[in-house]
Image: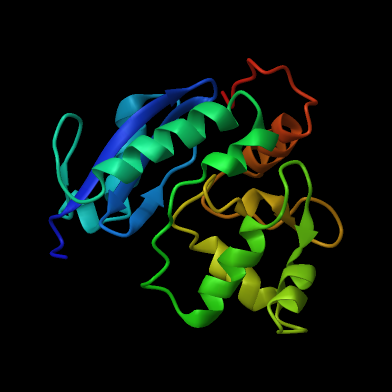
Length: 188
């Protein structure tokens, strides 16, 4: 695939605007909910060196379009009932990551909504006891937040350990998943 073949779109959710990009193998990038559509587009473009690999948006055909439709379904269900969203998870393209990062992301994908695991528990599940910091580094560059739910991985002593967004976002997402906030909750 050439660098110009990623389709992308922005989806309005009850918590804000989520931008998603997909290629011929699945979803490749997303951003956490943003308060404005333009902010979501800019955040996604930043993941692609200024957006030079994002060429096709709404209404166009091409590699990834079908995965964006699946991503839209996933987000719609997630922001209504997080527990049911896993059924609608679109294919995620993990092919460009190291085997360790792929394993971290697979382990994190298996954490049910509303539950958490520590960085050490994820490292143990990946067969890397003592690898909590390596797990943290892999999750710090998670290209697909919400789809790969890095907000479900916490420090041993509290929520902690969240990069790329305010810690309050992690807390609100966990509260949302646990049903502690009304289903019309907003991140803003």
